[in-house]
Amino acid sequence: MSKCSFIVSLMPLQVMDKMKDEESAELIYEEFHDIGNCKYNGTLIFEKYFMRAGNRAALVVLVNNIKGETKVTSVATGSSQGIFFKFDWGAADSFAGSVKRILESYIIEEIDE
Image (cartoon, rainbow, N blue to C red; front, side, top):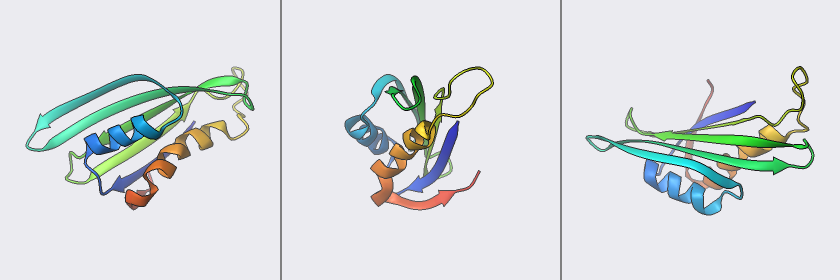
C-alpha cells in the first residue's frame, strides 16, 4: 500500500474532472456529494494492471473541502503478490504518485499523515 495527501488550489469537482481526464487507469467507480454550504466530498476508484508486479492494483482518490481547503488523498493497494509477500516492484508508489504528478502544479501543501 502507498498513500499520499496534499492540499490543492482547485475545488473538489475540478480535481475529480482533471483526474478522470488525465489518469491512464480504468475508472471503476465514482461518487460526488454536495454536502451544503459549498462543501463537497468525492471518491474515485481506478484499476490498472502492472506487468512488473504481475497483478492488478486499485487506486482510491478521496477529495473534499470540508475544512475549507481542498484535500486530496490517494491510496494505491492490491499490487503485491501473494498473501505474505508485500513486494510489488514499486507499482503502488507509482500508482499513488500519479495523482500527485497530475495535480502537481496545483499543490499548495503536502500533508504527512
